[in-house]
Image 1 (spheres, helix red, strand yellow):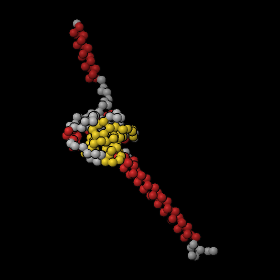
Image 2: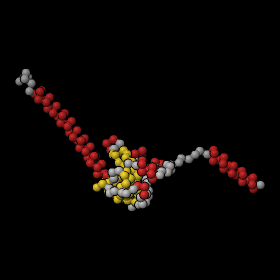
Image 3: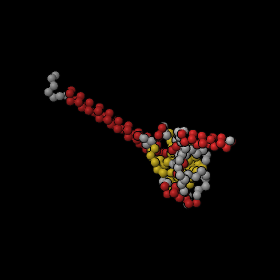
Image 4: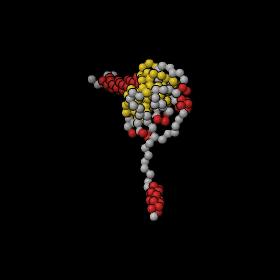
Length: 196
């Protein structure tokens, strides 16, 4: 009799699992990647320590900008202070390292933001093959030093150039309209056959 009750309970559990609607899954889903493949697919590979993280954007454009203090570069153009973007959503496999932790990062060139706020920067995810330790795999070879300065200084100069260009364009249009109004006014006031 106990066996019959046990079998009935198991069958009821199986039936409930088959009938119940599936819940939403929010976990990152990516296959493992070898270091060799990660190296081939990456634009830049470096070892760095996380200095700070900033949340940027909303909804589909939400990302975390991670600033690394870089001490070794294995591939690509990487600065001493390198900002790398990663999706903020866990379902998009965003990287969320602890401040002060050292990582070997595999990143690709990406476009982040929209409109006039668009910037080109390195992007990485949990699926990029990043190594959460300061020990670089031997396959990466000998490192070289990073470029001087910070990667986002270049972004700031590009944004400044955009602002200056926009300001000059608006100023030029205002001067053009003002010049046209002055010319029309002079023609109306100084007509040769105008009654006095």
